[in-house]
Image (cartoon, rainbow, N blue to C red; front, side):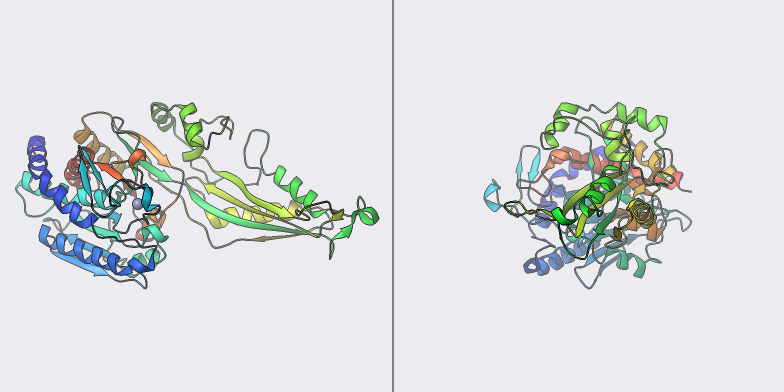
Length: 463
Ligand SMILES: [Zn+2]
């Protein structure tokens, strides 16, 4: 394939691409608002029709007990070629506060190189660059079918918690069978520092109750002679980290995939300004965390324990001299690659039982099974192939990032049993989930270009 052919095709197609995307963005597919459920269905129908027009031989709207996803498949010419699922979502976030929008969120407008409207970056724009990428790749190769079987899966409930997504994946597991999953729903470091995400942290939660006497006690009559559950809770939570900022729960780090020297070196090459970052961290006055790791390593690749809330005893006005009967705390763990939320919850439960002093009964409740982390090693075939495609499109080095939070990506990796590859061109400055969401059109076109190269790179890498 001649690079110039792909580039020329994309340039020639730019206006049509933007016009079509604007039509889709005008549909207010807000999944979190029941009043917009019909709009989410309209959005799915619009996309299905569009993909049929693009030449996808199979296009289906997949219903769920909630809102529909769109599935489209374009088989490779070669029946032995690898299959790749491409994941994105067509639902969007609510638009409140409406008065902060400078333009109507669902009347997308172009201002210079920017396209402004809800969903422009998250995630309709990023789903859409794949359609242009496929067109450009086919036009440039002169072929009728891509070099890998492409299975586009565009969810309709991502912004409202992906409640039916795991079931959808299980129901259609056979049709979604694949050798890799390309995720296009993340961001790059910046417009001039292209990067790829290689993982997301998982999540495990727990709530601790410590119980002492049957009721609150008079501290004059009993204080100092029976255990105080709030003191026990304070000791317990104080012991959660050691002096190096490491989580003290035995076994907690056993399964953590360590950062490689290469990944640390690549993270260190990102132009990171800690002072600026601290301002985004609610004007925190100092960085803090596990000894021996940088701030980016701490939020991307290391697990944590956070106390989210603690309460008990008398917190109303005035004094009340009691030994309280109970103490409560909510704890959450962000999990790094390799950790299992259920295992962490059990390790925590065992640790709490061991820490509780005589006379204090400890109960640990876990709300659900948490979220598994997901991670793709930077030297895995899929990541290397996608990095080559990105480097061809952006004409230079592509670095790596991870994300500190979690989404439905781990379900894709686990249920489809395939490695994840993140190819995305959103920016942290795109104001996703906020008023005046925008996307940089030149980056969407670069995304289309990377997507155009991706299929042949993956065809070779995944064989
Ligand atoms: Zn998104």
